[in-house]
Length: 64
Image (tube, rainbow, N blue to C red; front, side, top):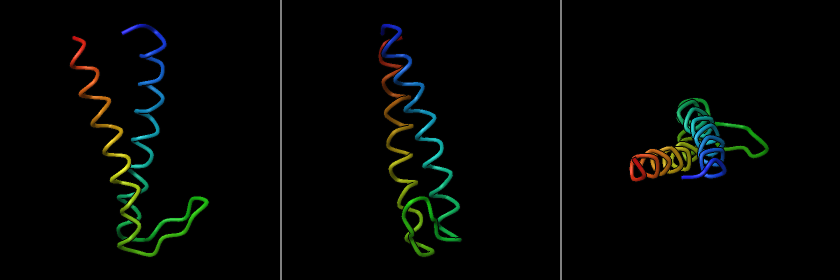
């Protein structure tokens, strides 16, 4: 991977971790980040976050 790929992966990983955390909190309290989701539905951002985090981990390992 070149430096641009690594920078993009770093940004995606940070965004994925934020979405994952928001989704975990949203499961119990709902979430509100330019959108509102009631409790239980607030876990939806965690699925997006996990997808980003998991794809970053797989991409990073595949080039090793």
